[in-house]
Image (cartoon, rainbow, N blue to C red; front, side):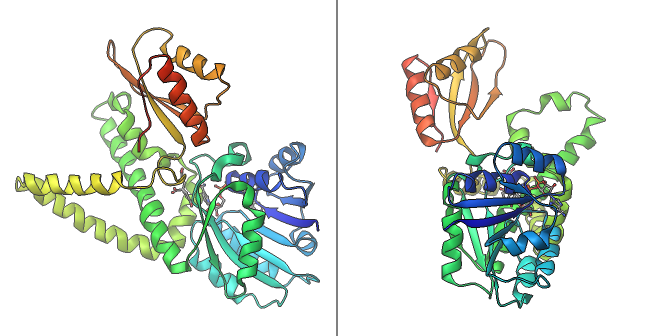
Length: 366
Ligand SMILES: NC(=O)c1ccc[n+]([C@@H]2O[C@H](COP(=O)([O-])OP(=O)(O)OC[C@H]3O[C@@H](n4cnc5c(N)ncnc54)[C@H](O)[C@@H]3O)[C@@H](O)[C@H]2O)c1
Ligand SMILES: O=C(O)C(=O)C[C@]1(C(=O)O)C=C[C@@H](O)C=C1
């Protein structure tokens, strides 16, 4: 039976989800977005079947509703649902990065026809909007579900089925578990990334060349500081309590590191770095959203004209599509490294083989 799915917010996440749901034949997608250009693009590309400007009316038509707006706006839509005069069951989900206030709002819903299962795909980007959306965004990523009091296993299964084309892997957690874990591996790191950028900016006045020296390390660790500040302001305040307590913990830890250096404690400094390396090296690398975000290969190249062109040409010959390419380090006369990202492990493996056949040294980092 054909299901009607309402997607509110067709930006990076909502747009990417819509592109996957649109692959299913038995689904009719209604899209709502505050930005008219976004709606027009999604409609023109056939990602949605109908554009709507009326949430209440569309919610009444829908069987499933996905709220993919900034968190405070998602809460607002949830509150509106209470007063809609539904005449058939509506399963609602969201994609918010922080769950506590969303679930509080969802648990307060008392409409007998409404059920809510929270959702959070653990993959994304520093980019925003529909133009950044892509269907493979969630491939192999963890997709967290946080059921409300108004949901049963059956509803979670319906949601997984609807999102099956994303190729994400679903895990269920309580709101508290979710918010604590994401504070540690997403929200707090974001805060630190922004602080590192501020520090570089402060030093810029003294060293005008600092910008040009920023190489792989600084760029890797601060990429997320380029994200949409409005979205992250929302995330920080939604998870404020945990962020404050983590900041206190971190300041304490930095005080300790400062003492190691002040007191010349080389062994403890080594141990600190070595423990971090061991844990970091043990992170699962095949999960997207974890690290790396794509399927990467590292190719040694020499600083000679046409080197990058040659590598790209070899991959083009076997019709491999490159998702991202980055020069990690290349200095005059010295070997540099090209990081090339693919959307699937199959493309990653083929690329490694085909470049090795052309005598390139290729590595897949575990
Ligand atoms: N960016 C990430 O990496 C990421 C990852 C996972 C989850 N999330 C969550 O996804 C949600 C959306 O984030 P995003 O990155 O897709 O942002 P985005 O800015 O790319 O998209 C948000 C969309 O919502 C639309 N919108 C804003 N206000 C609206 C309103 N009142 N009514 C209808 N549409 C409205 C915008 O026009 C935009 O198209 C957030 O709750 C965020 O926490 C983000
Ligand atoms: O890859 C990125 O740019 C992201 O910031 C994605 C990221 C994260 O890993 O922290 C950001 C927010 C989300 O809620 C989930 C994923």
